Image (cartoon, rainbow, N blue to C red; front, side):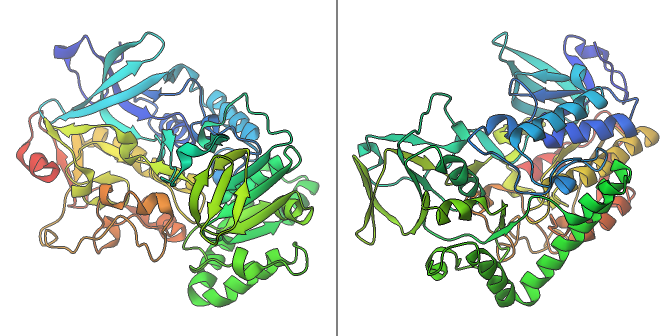
Length: 515
């Protein structure tokens, strides 16, 4: 039985107690737990992971060629140097995460096959109670914690996004979503069509090109690509000089962040110039006469969606060799042997791979309640994309769209650890962000500015996400350079933080905000 450091509670001894419960043993959960152990060594914690092993996204995604679409200097942790090539394979990332678990001695704190099915907060007891299904024993247990740290990622693992195409049920070939890649698939001598144009499609196609008869990338809308060597001259030079790995890692993180900030500035100040730069850079890798206007020119500004990096230009090598091709069109209907396009053309296919994206999971699709009232997160206002009005003692890790996800994991973890230590030091049992006097009439907007960031998964879920206000503290900023200074300087005595020092705080305010 674990005892809570926030105070004793002898009335519920049948339920296991923790100071902190972390949901998810992927890159967010492992990083958060490591920093929790470092900065809050006296707090008890457990990590609940629905899957059978660590890794989250990287455990689930096992389609051919699976790799990062961000550099591992920033996608890796600030506390653990990355020693390999900037773009890493799935296996390399899983190994890196496994090492992080071992180095922080987290293994005994992780409970695999534990799926959270409900989370309820009691203001009277200042505790979260989680209903958890244990897959190995096929039963349910209750766990309690003073603080809940949601690190479960941002999309649904049980199903990917597949549009409702006409005639799909008529197709007699095999349909595969990359999120659920089967072990028994054999693509030898098969005509394969990959529907989609993002990072997943760009990864799959070169990996399949040598295996199948031919692979076609069918895209409705082109994506911006950038191609380059899967290496960095500066990192190689520093390694040749025998510079310490931790120094190299920090130098490279700073370089990558600066380069990304410069790219974002160019996208804002000179979008047409950046557009030409990206398209011309890729065109050089393709045969003369390739129609870049049709196939490589998106209708949106650069970086409204992620630019897909193609290491060593492998996608374009596959196209140049004739093993792969791009078709830009919309689907009219499937039939038994392929796809008829809106232009009247058709694609014959034995296998169709739907690299069409995923469905977003808002708070892991877990039903939350506060004092018996269900929480509708779309009715809450976000505090810096981390906490939410009306929801006490809970934090959510949600990363960046244009920078590596993990950069924000480190920042959020630093803030939460400071907050947990503040609760202990002041004797507070709970904290919740609350709109300050005069802010009740503040204009609220969707979670993110869709002119700045508008991937499909986000647009499909905006109405379910928390709202943002017109002040920086009530927004989830996508600006890492700003947040890297603002988040460490958060004043925990700011009046927007409502602390409770009673075992029975006024629950009416929570109910009103969560209704």
